[in-house]
Every structure is written in structure tokens, then in C-alpha cells.
Length: 206
Image (cartoon, rainbow, N blue to C red):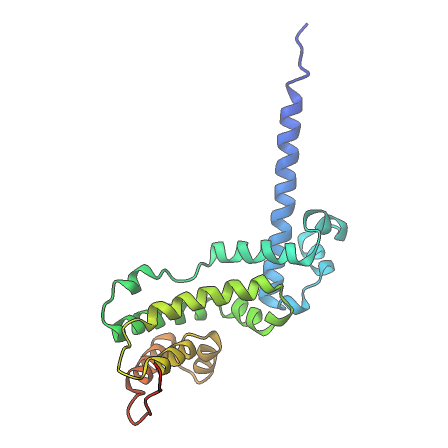
């Protein structure tokens, strides 16, 4: 007589794990969809459960609190929509050309992801702190790369402030509302930064 006790059990365990992973995936993707449409502030656990086709208790079983759900949602979305790669920008030695290259790619990214990013920035105050910290860290790295090389004597701080402004998502939103496409907006902001020191006072201590 063949002993089959060890046969079906691993299969059932694997099947169970797959079902758990599939349920988790549906919950995360439902959250991403709601964040991108109604926004994080209007996303509720009941809404996530309904969108995912599960019970509220199932959502809480996978994600004990909203911070855990936010974390999974944020990681999932950025894995599929990563920030522009900075390596190519760093290889551009001329600061004006580097800024134009970076802004062009960054504004394209903003344009392609306007719904999710617009909702995220609008509702950032209700998100767990780590979400804002992660987004600020990404933007800070972009600013550092694009600020390199703007070394006119005495104007370093002005350049840092100007570049921080032109890479901000909300700056792009304003330009978009004025009817500029990403290339036009990048041209305008590059020209603004490149020509801004004419007639400006030198900032002491920079």
C-alpha cells in the first residue's frame, strides 16, 4: 500500500499560498486604482474591499492598518512607475544641457503619471510620514544632480532655490495648466534658470 500522506499536503500548502498572494495582490491593486482616481484621502477600507471583491476583515487580515496598506500600495506603484534614471543626466557635463535633459524627462514623467502624482501631492498630509519622506528624498536627489555645475560666484543659493522650484510637480502642473507641453515647459524653465542672475544681488556667504 502506497503512503500518500506527504503527496497532497505540499500541493495544498502551495495552492493556499498562491491564493493568499493573489488576494493580497488584488487588495494592493484596488488601493492603487482608488488612490489614482479618487485619491488617498477619499480611499476607505470599505472601498478597497469592494474594489478587490473581498470582505473588510480580509483587507485587515493582510494589512493590519492603513500605514501597512499605504506602504504596499506605494511600493507597488513606484515599482511599475519608477522615477527617471539619473545616470544619463550625470553624464552630461554642461549644466544647462543637463538641466534641459533632466527637466524634459521629469516633465514627461509628471505628464504620464499626472493622476496619481496629483492626488498624492494633494493628499500628502493624510499619508503616513514615510510616503512624504520617500518622495522628498527622490526629488532631493534629482535637485542635487541638476544643481551641479551652476557655480557663478555668489549665486549658488539662488540656483539651488530655482532648481528646487522648477523640478517641483506643482510647478509642472502650473505650466501644464497654461497649455505648455512637457518640451515647451522644459525649454522655458531651463531658460529661466540660465538667465536669472542678470541684475540679481549676490547672496552673501554662498
